[in-house]
Image (cartoon, rainbow, N blue to C red; front, side, top):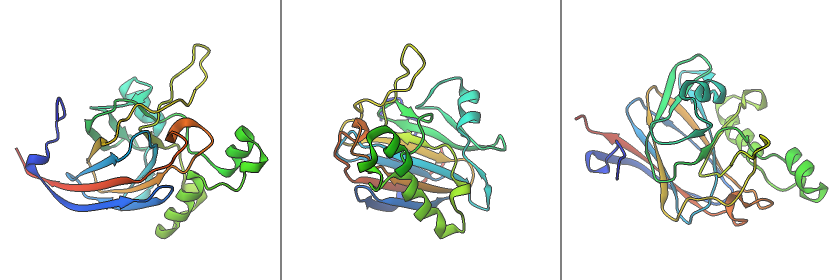
Length: 214
């Protein structure tokens, strides 16, 4: 595990699922549990949203998270902060080190603007989120700025965001420790018009661990 604080040697997997290419996923994470996202084939972006499990109005805040850590990217040790200023999750393991939380989620509308009208009806992360969030009584108004795990978004000299080839290798992972009970929503990004998925969306694996003390 290198410098990672989380060790599978002291953890028990209680959930293990393959999320197909282009598909959404959601689940609850209890305080103290660790969720591992595994990029099975490499260069696969995973869009993520987080909500307090017993109060959905409290949710992940990209702005508060970036201000708290003073960095443009999410990586090992990053603390994910809510819109109420509370700690939601901590990154306790990371094989990649480059996770974006500024570029947002792809949508049918943004596909049209960026890539042409012929891409309007291609499936996108925003649509995945709308489908999945509906299971919990929420809708479009509850979608906020998300994290793009494994997505490589360098900042250009002029301040623009670029989307380039991902750096995550097959089997790359990120571990998130819940600091409160959290609802997690993922979109296994279906984008094929830019290199965030290597132009080839692939499956991911989601594992939840109960962790021993000490």
